Image 1 (cartoon, rainbow, N blue to C red):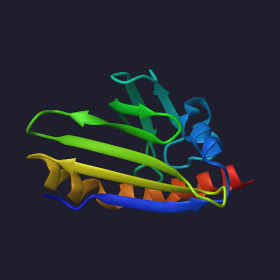
Image 2: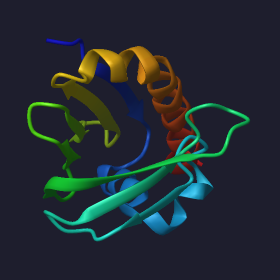
Image 3: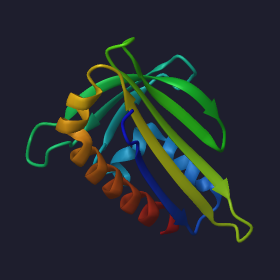
Length: 143
């Protein structure tokens, strides 16, 4: 089993504001340098097509995934399922803190026969991109 890609942050903003930012797909370019363009059918089973700057200086890569779970204002799950070949599961969870701030937690699990190759090729760019996204999201929701 592969090691998941995990990122966490605390935002000094209410959970509703963070939820609004991560689900306002038409405005990702305002804060998300890694994935500035997203098109989606925002419902469980609906597709989410992301255009990610995996390798700076190159054309963005695009990938369509599907929503597995949408639980406002606390949880989003989406990914791909190509059977035994490849499955991804990205979970983003927002925890409301007593101070009124929000703890954000993101996990990406990649499994299946092709997982070692995918992780070899993309683990570092995904990790870099998720860190860049968190920096942008923090500035956006706290600004």
